[in-house]
Image (cartoon, rainbow, N blue to C red; front, top):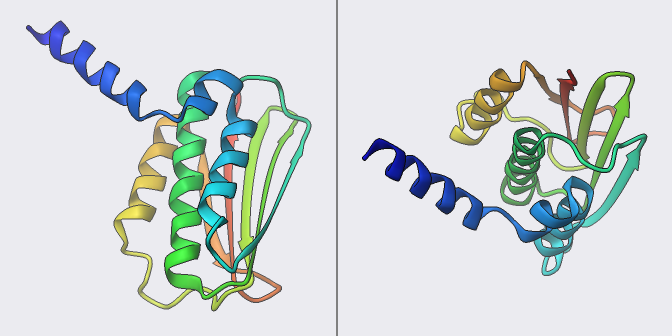
Length: 149
């Protein structure tokens, strides 16, 4: 009985998984995510990547994808930004995701949203860190760092 439910959950979560993530990996999936997120938006985006491997463990790719989704969604909903920049790089044995926008920056007491709690709980599992601050170029700067085994 339990294994049937576990299999069902796994099947559903795979159906919810973007095809690009399964087939081509994180970079392609993030490119698709950015394009579809900003297709009908006035926000201009830029995506840079550096030193990445072809594939990472599935849980890591899915988590980084979902975290990116959450942070991009926040930018669209709350920031009034006109530009967003996403950078993904591997430096030594760390994977680093940086998302920066030129919007209004962080509002005091706005950090209680479920989205940011989701980000933090995904990272706990991966032993990663999450930092959110006002960006030097105004706006918001989010940094996610995940150690690679």
